[in-house]
Length: 400
Image (cartoon, rainbow, N blue to C red):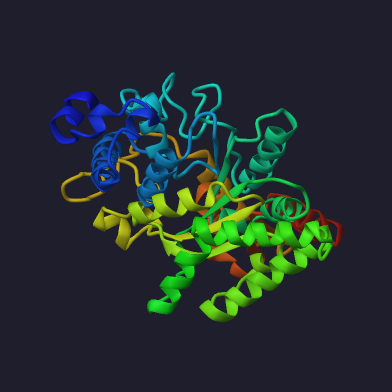
């Protein structure tokens, strides 16, 4: 059965969507079904042609809501890494070719501007989306496209990278209207409970509240009560009061960036309302969403790490199909990993460093054998190499 035959038989709404313009023709009440069909199609496709599974399953509602609210491709969406962008590819004219994902001559496994105008920037390993989106937002102002909206979608792992914080720091001091979506699927931050919390989070994203807020700021500025420096003080005071009332606080509130407390990232109707409310706000802002990796497929929800990129699997049972490597040469990364352990056994000055890729580089073998001499520094490649250089300077033999 071809992809189109499967979609025609199992995904009646998805079959009608060849671009975000088609998605916008639907009623908001139909979007939940679109999300369900996207997941069904991805499970079917990825069971036969492996790819990054759990992250894309967890980001479906975010993708649908963004393309429903924003005017892509004129409005820009920047995906960090791209692990969560499969639904984006399917909705932007690549549904028929999705079976060719990550194959020779087929679709890239990541966003690729050479592949589609909807892919706005090449993804690195991680953490570059905020810097890229900031550039797009400022460029929109300087090139007479002030109505263009720019959205950076970044995950909780990627935002730990130093480059992300460099971008946030610049976003806080340069005029821009960027929206940052923090897709948090690992921090286990509980949503606010109770009527007051719901009222406050609804109020702070509402159009009427923000119109009043903006007009008040304009009035105070016109009468020289506050200037540019005062604007930052007012914003930080506003964030501090919101933190006090909602019981939520974090590092972003110390920057001049509007921050909206965690929402359920799987409530697509709510996401449409939130994105609609915040998209016209002036200045940089962040919406924090809490999602679940592997959402909609029980085996992936139970073991998201294994299902990050699970390989072939039976879509009905969830049983992974591990191909025998009998008769095939050992993977190069495993040659490296085993050799490193062998060398480290004979030389106690050898240490290992990886930037969030222990299994992907087989540094995990060194990690198991010599945990005190192996360092996973997270998604921080610049830090990793600097750290590596100093260890070498001080007499150790690092492998990075």
